[in-house]
Each structure stands twice: as structure tokens, then as C-alpha cells.
Image (cartoon, rainbow, N blue to C red; front, side, top):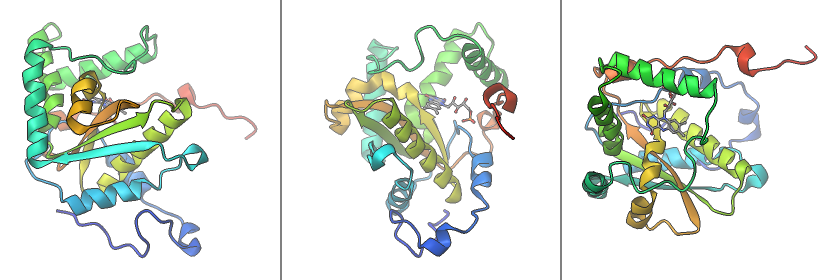
Length: 247
Ligand SMILES: Cc1cc2nc3c(=O)[nH]c(=O)nc-3n(C[C@H](O)[C@H](O)[C@H](O)COP(=O)(O)O)c2cc1C
């Protein structure tokens, strides 16, 4: 397993000024090699590594330095128990118990809706699942609730008083975790699918009522042989989302 790199400063303190001003060349590698991993090896991640990763990720910026993120890390027996509990609950309520926020806008329009459909179609085509095969699609969806085999799970929540700006801060915290995971040779899958189990998860983890449960994240060692991990997600062209003025 990749070990955390030695660091001259503690993970949650910023490095000395001379280091802060140097170019950091390899964030692009982490960005390029991060993907939503949907098959993991049954190999645990050390608690010390998860702790270091989360401490490093807290260098993420946040408006007013509010640091509005809260994270629960789960492994071992408690993780197995949660997965079992959700599996049992799914027999009665296959669609979950209801999320605390709209996972997607109620009337999602193009180009966003088209992109959502496109990535779904690519996933099912890669897996050889026919468009009309609802059972096979549900089977693939259900793998979310086993963290795709990952042995470490993260759950994220944010205080209900927080607004859009702080949700964006939370997103930056998540992305920092996902990029740092690459530094340690690990992979991740952010999972809003868990949002539909908010009441069960909040009870299980004792997440207080004044917090909104956002999502889960699988963390672990990617299965290099799994076909599903070959999925490549396209991106819109630069001119579709960026406007340049005054260059
Ligand atoms: C907040 C968030 C929630 C997501 N939820 C899920 C999920 O529940 N299940 C899943 O398989 N992928 C989930 N994804 C992964 C997206 O489908 C993925 O990021 C997108 O298709 C781009 O692919 P890539 O991450 O491989 O680049 C989520 C991504 C984000 C950022």
C-alpha cells in the first residue's frame, strides 16, 4: 500500500512561505488519473492514512474560512453493518427513504440532462447492459450501496444554516480528498446515491438533526481488471463553459 509522504509541516498547517511560492507540477496528474471508481479490491486502507488524507484535505479553501465540512469515516464491522442494514431496508423501500435535498434539479434541462443520459448510456454499454434491461440497471445501481466493494467509506454532512457558498466549500473539500487519494495510490467514487438513505445513515452515524446529509464516498484500491473502471467520461469543449474577455 502506498504510504503517506513525509511532510515537513503537519498536514493541516500550511507549508512555509518559501514552499508555498514554488510551482507544484503534479496536481494535473492527480486530476487526469482520478475517475469515479466503481470496483474496488477487498483491501483495507489504514486509519492513519485516512486521517492524514482528511487533515490534508482541510487545506481546501472556504469562504470566510468557515470550513463547513463534516465527515464520518467508516471501516470494518460498522461498515459491514451499515451495508447490511441498507440492504435489508432496500427490500421494503427499493427507492430509499428520501434525500434531504434535490440530488438533481426537478426539471433538468439540456445540455445537462443530455449529459446525464449520455454517461448512463456509456456505462451500460460498457457493461453490456441493454437499454430496456431494468433489472440489470438496478443491479448496477445497487452496487453503490456496497461501496463498489471499497473497504473504507466516507460520509459528508453540512450544517443546515449553510447556504450555496458553503456547499461549494464542501465540494472543494471532497475534490481535495479525491485528488489526495491519487497521491496515495488510492481511488474514490463520490456517491450521492447514498442521499436517499439519509434518515438511516444519520441515525446509524449519530449525525445531528441540524445537519443535512450530503453524500457518501467510496475510498480504496481500484480493481485494475474490472471492466467498469474503464469507463471514460467525456467533457464539454472549453468554449461551451468558458468565456474569455480582454486577452
Ligand atoms: C457529488 C457527486 C455525486 C456522485 N454520485 C454518484 C453516485 O451516487 N454513484 C456513481 O456511480 N457515481 C456518482 N458520481 C460520479 C459521477 O457520475 C462522475 O463524476 C461523472 O460521471 C464524471 O465521471 P468521472 O468522475 O469518472 O470523471 C458522483 C459525482 C459527484 C461529484
